Image 1 (cartoon, rainbow, N blue to C red):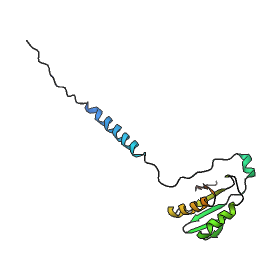
Image 2 (image 1 turned 135 degrees about the vertical axis):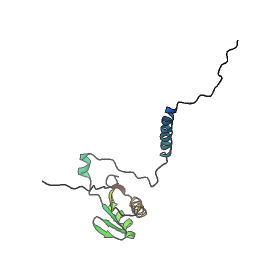
Image 3 (image 1 turned 180 degrees about the horizontal axis):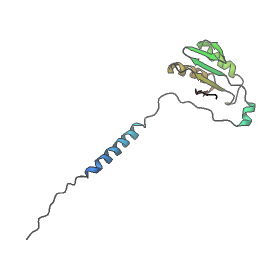
Image 4 (image 1 turned 90 degrees about the vertical axis):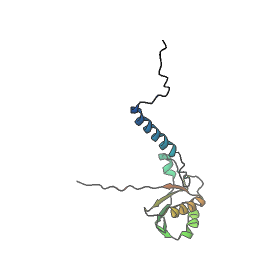
Length: 141
């Protein structure tokens, strides 16, 4: 007598594993989607300096960007005068540490205006560093 065997070759995965498989697929697609490069212009930010170098450092020019206005060292200038003013301030400074320009911007400054200003500073030979100020309230007892 022949024994009949069940020759069913298709095996269903356990139903409890479907949630795990879905989670792994979601993580996989999120990782693949986040590989896109960032947009914008590359910035070379200066590294931190040691205390000895700070003594020899001259005062860095400060550029404040507001909506449609530019202040250089607390003096309002026209946008067309910025390259000449920056060339004048950076003249004779050979080391990159001496050519650092501190850039501050208001929150409502348009991105294209910021890119235009920082591009002019870099063309004049400046090394851009960003100053980020945090707002916080201090309560005095």
